[in-house]
Each structure stands twice: as C-alpha cells, then as structure tokens.
Image (cartoon, rainbow over all chains, first blue to last red; front, side, top):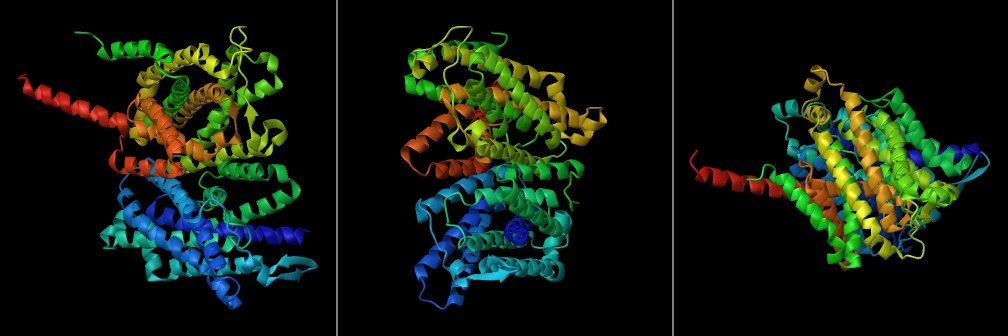
Length: 288
Length: 328
C-alpha cells in the first residue's frame, strides 16, 4: 500500500503547494497575510462546480478540463476588486488592522457564496470519473489525481520562471525585498501590488477548482486548507518558494501516512512536527 | 470637586450592575452575562494586543481550556464539581496551556506570532474534535449546574440559577478582574510591556528582558481568557470544540477592536456590544457573518480606535474647547 500512500501524499502536497504559493506571493510582495485566501479558494471551487454542472456532459471532454480555469478567473476577478476597494488602503496600516480587514473580508465572502449558491453542496465529479483509473505497480489509482499533480507542476514551473526570469517577476521580488528602495527606483508599487494580489488569488481559485471534482463544494470548504497552508508557509519560511514546496511535501506526506497509520491523531501529529521544526528553527526551514 | 471622578463613576456603575437582575428580563440578563464573561476575555486579550503589541489569533484555545476544564470535571470527577474548585482548576489549566503555547509563540512577533498562535489553537481544536471518547468530539460536553460552598442548586432551573446567585458570583469575579488588570497595566511591569510595544530595541537596551516579559503577558492574558471561558460555560450549559477554532479566536479579536484596544475599558464595551450585535444579526438574517464581516471592515477603515476610542477622542475634543474658552 505504500505506493498509494506516497501518491496520495504527493497529491495533498500538490494542492497545498498551489494554495500556499498564492498566500506566499501576497505575503512576500505586500506583507499582508490574507485570511480571505480560504474564501477565494472556496469561490474557485463553487464556480467550477457550477460551470461543470451547467454545461453537463454534452461537450467534448477536454472542454470539461478547460472549465476548471473558471476558478482561476473568477477568484482573480474577486481578488482584483478586493485589492482595489479594500486592501489598497491597508499598506500603511499596522499588522492588526491588515489581519482584521482580511478576516472581515473572509466572513463577508463566505456569506456571499452562501447567498449566490445557497447552502447545499454542489457535486461535480464528471472530470474525475471521465479520466478513469490506471494501474501503478499493481495498485489502481485515479488518473485525475495525477492530472492535478501535473497541473500543479506546470503552475509551479510557471511561477518559478516568472519570478526568477521575467522583468515583472524581478520587479515583484524587488518590492518584497525592500519596498522603499523599489519606490525610489520608480516602480509603480500600486499596480504591481494589484497584480501580485490577483495572481495569488487566482492560484487559490485554481486550487479550489481542481479539488471540486473529488469532493463536493461545501460552505466553509476553504477553512481547513487555509490552516494547512499557514503551516506550510510557517514551516517553509515566509516568502520562500523552495520553502513552500518542501513545506507542502512535508505536510502532504504527514497527512497521507498519518491518515493511514494513526487516523485519530493525524492532525495533531502534523502540528507537533511543525512545532518541533519551529523550536529548532524559528524562521522556518528556508526563512530569511 | 471630587478627587477621583473616574473611581466614583466606577463605583456607581458597579452599584447599578448590582440591580441589573431586577431591571432586565431573564433573556436579556443571560445575554448580559455572556457579555460580562466576554468582557473578562477581552480584558485579558487586550493585555497582549493593546499593551504588548502582539496580535494572537488563537486565544480561543485558552477559552476552550477554561470551558473544557469545567466540563471534564463534571464528567469525570462529579464530586469535585463546585465553583470554588472549578474556577482555580480552570485557571490552573489555562496557565499550563498558555505556558506551553506561550513559550513557543513569544519567540516570534508580528505575523509569525499570529500564525503560530492560530496553528496551536487549531492543534487543541483537532485534539478536542478527534478524541471523541474523552471530549465528546463534535457533540461537545454538557455543563450541569455546579454547587457553591456546599450549597447545591439541584431542582433549580438554569435561568433561575443564572439570574440569582450566579449573576453576583460573575459580577464579583468581573470586578476583581478589572481591578487586577488595572493594577497590572499601571504597575512597572505594565509600563515595561508598553515600552516593549512602542520600541522593542530601546526596551531591551534599558534592561527589560523582552522575551520573558512577553511570555508573562501571554500567560496572564491566557489565564484571564481561561477564566472567561470557565464562567461562560455555566451560562451556555454546553461546550464544543469550536471554542478552540480560529474563527472563534477571530471573534475575540473583533470584540476587542470594536470597543477599542487603546483603552483599558474598550474591550469591556466591545464585548457587551458584540454579544448584542451578534444576537441581533443572527436573529434577523441568516447572513450574520456578512453583517459581522461588513461591520469589521467599516471599523477598520473608519473607526480604527473602536467605539470607546471614538468616545474618548470626542470627550478630549470637548475638554479642549472648554479649556480654550477660559483664560489661563
């Protein structure tokens, strides 16, 4: 069974990596811990489920997978509106207010989701079932999970290339290193911050959309992944891509083997490991 | 002129509070008691946020520690189930928990501190939620009526208990908490915390042991919150794991901000306002989170010093005007 556990661990890690990537970009560039990230993830899940249900089975299968991008798009749009209307005014404020504002936005968005899609769960498992299963070393495994890992791999590669090699990415990194100096060099901080926030939100939405074929979209679906993403960010180190990757793998594998071996204390075990790492290395594994 | 108008005002308020059970209906009184327990929580929380400058997003954990101490004693040691044992026990357990969590958390500040307190409270949540056989899991635990100094309240219904003896018990503990907290923040220790909040490096250079003082503040704050949780559990009659969930911790932050964390009395006003606001929102709409979220955003953007802060600055303005009017 260890093959399955390993694959499941990779799958959990992939999703967490996507979520914490967005969280990390926003945190790194803007210095804001976005508690509403969980709600953006939920928005991605709900819109993707809704679109999949709406178009039904009468389209060519590949289109079904394109619809998963709806999560990315809508969460990006919501992120854009949020940044323009609320987050914009928070850059100069102290941490307490920044956190509380995003907490307020989280509560508000959760109820907006409830207003739009009602209280019941949305089931949209078509993309999951359509792909079927594959035989890996004598174990049957759903192909959809491999698909999610592949998409995450692409997204991670894209972000790595974008942040490291493109001009826009280098400007974002400059802001995260030294905001004042970046302003002094004439970077348009306002615009770049909007961009970073939209990018981070979109990644959260994409993660939500990718999850929805495997579990129904429920109210509060974003709360647990948000907490796990926090752990990933803390363990990996603030603002570090490498840290997010290693942290996500650690949390993913702990979950997958934890659920299999000691289901009762899987979550506490996770926190325990995170706690030990932080006692030994307070800045996280790759923190500055 | 009275020498200490503030002190006189507080004594007057306390006397009015003594007569509250005769003024309010049972339902409103219960709400008021929720408000009082949260006021104790807010007082403790504010020592950390307002006076030490650390924002914890996990104080629900100590609230749950206090509340679950009561519920677990009711379940496993029913013979020890009397208020004079329960309150010290709740204080003890929240002390132990806040020493352990605080030791880990005060190594960090700012966002790291917030995430860490949040994660640790979720650890307690996971334990309370998963260990079904011990803690009742998602069903939670029932909190029966306790005894006080050998007096049993058997045969008395909860509303009568709450509007009689228990109200005065709660009020006395509330008053004691206020006095103690006032003593703490105006003591040299409290001043040292404020120095750490305003300038950590300078505080360290004049010989304040920053990390240790932060830990002390964390522990005291945790004990106040634990006391609030224990007192709350009798009013509510039921405890669930949700008390340790970070959204509940968020509500504690919210009520402190609502009242205003720059002022000692702020969280008290905030806690009582929040209790009524939440009930009003829950009673009138199914979208109460929307109401709470929207008011929170408005508060952050327009009233950053909270209700008490706004009143205080208004009073200060009026005072300045009258002073200007008289030649000096």
